[in-house]
Image (cartoon, rainbow, N blue to C red; front, side):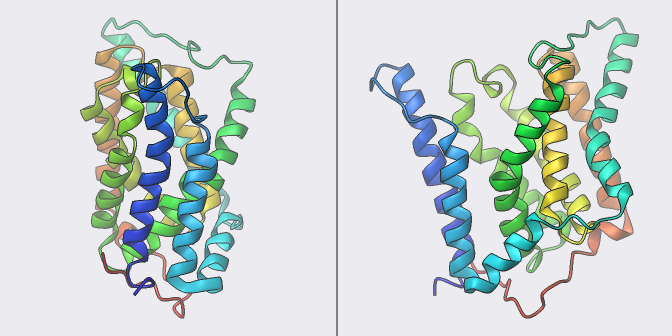
Length: 269
C-alpha cells in the first residue's frame, strides 16, 4: 500500500514539514508566538526527510540508490552544462535589453553583489542539489513521467512547486513577498518545463538540474529581472513562457528518460 501511495506520502510530507517551519515565522510576525524555527530547516531537514522516506517506501534500497545516483550523475554532454549555466542569464539579459530600449530603468546588483556571485552560486547549488532538486526532479518527476507525458508531468509538478512556495509570500521581507504570486506561478510552470527538458536530455541528472536551478535564482537575484520593476518582471516571465513553449514543442521533449526499468515507478495518488 505504501509503495503505491508513495507519491501522495511525498506530497504530504514535503508540504507538512517545510510549511510548519515557515508558519512559525509567520506566526511570530503576527505576535501569535514569540519564537520561530530557522527557515533553512524547511529545506535541509523538511525536504530531506520527505524525499528519502518517500523513496524508501516507493522501492526500498533500490529507489534510494537510484535517487543518489541521479544526484552524482555528472557524465553529461558539455553542451548541457553550458545550457544549464547560461540559459536563464541569457534570457534575463535579452529581457533587460528590450526593457532598457523602451526607457526602462535597470537595477543590477541590489540583492546579490558582483563580488559575491561565485559564493552565492555555490551555496545555492549545494542547497538545491541536496534538497529541492532531489525532491522535485530526483523523486517526483520520474514517477510523474511514468504516468503522464513530459509536458503534463511538468505542469503538474510546476503547480505543486508553485503552491509549495505560498507561505514564503506571507513572510515579511522575503523575496517572494515583493512579487506578484500569479506571475510567480506562471514562471514556476515555465521553469518546471525547462528543467524537465534539461532532465530528459541529460539522462535524468539531478546534478545538472541543480546547476540550472541555482543559475536561475542567482541570475534573477543579481540582475533584478523579477524585483526591479513590475514591467521588467512581466517581460521576463513572458520570455520564460516563450522559451518553455519552444522547448515543449520539440520532438525530444516528449521522450522521457527510460532508465532502471526494473525499478517500479508506477504511482497512484
